[in-house]
Image (cartoon, rainbow, N blue to C red; front, side, top):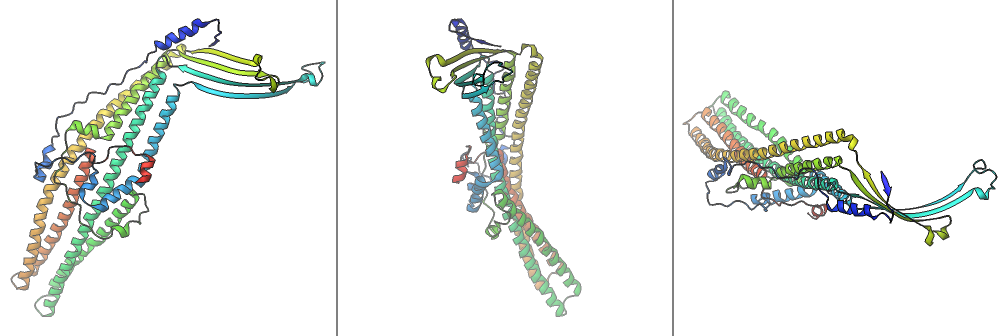
Length: 491
């Protein structure tokens, strides 16, 4: 119901002002939930043991982790992806939308001012005004007005809505940061896998070349009557088996190049020439310090996003609860009205209206309480999601610590195995040429060299990708800020 307030009735305005001064905010206030986390990671010592370096210090959290691998091409690819990746642009658009919606909610707390004008030329019919001539049935009117309306936020409905919008915007910012972490990690991981595959291809080609020399040696002996076709067939079969590895490796290399191009916002074939020359795998950091679980939770953007969504869900309980109470709206109108444009702004042409509106859906309390219950259930779900994100972050980090440490151990052992197998293959060739060993011994040694060197290249690749995964899990070692479109354009 809306009631006009006249100058002779100031008591209503006084009451309104008193209510405004006593305004309260209904609904629960957000309190960050307590989360029990251990003081240290269970696998924290694994990386130190693997690196055998106790005095190293952790990487600063504001350093770009990809720069610590000492590969300029990797660093350039990550920067290009952060500037041009389309998934990142989607996340940025969501962040900008959340901020725009927050600005809109803030305007809800301010008066809404409108302006309008109207001109009418009306002619009534002869039946409506019998006996009146044509000119007498014509009516003209002109009016112009400025109006304002303002919802008095006595019970915090608008304030809670703004609070929820602010938390939603913060969650979108954290989502954008998480997208940056994921994109940088994907580029680094794919790049490392590419270099590892190129190393495995080199190993296969080198072993194929050695086995081709062995086949030529066997064929020469057969031609000289010192061997058999059986020996030649066995040597040729081993060479063909090794050559068969090459096409599969070349295909995987092509896939990795295509993936890197798409991650950097380009067509799949645009990086082939740039990435075709083989480059050694990036160097491993001496030691990666995981810090403490508490520090991890402060850095992880997915945990921050889950917490902000819990905050928003809590604030929406207050938005729903405010519907249990009346809404008060102040309205005003100041205008002018006349039958001719020349009289519009004369003294007696002014019009005005001041009104207090009261809207209270107390008869619909069942629906209101249902909405409150639904908002409470959403908050409970958001709380469970937050706690789950904390557990998943801890699990992700513990797994990354173990994966990296064990990959380093495997890497070290397979490096020694590759060196020993290369020595064994060389000695077997020497013994064969001297007549002290048979062909089977040579072929077996060469097969062992190929397997050991390929396994070592694969293990070294997994060691470096394990380091990338650990950086991702820790959400550290890279700039912790939310970029704008201008930032991306300047990269």
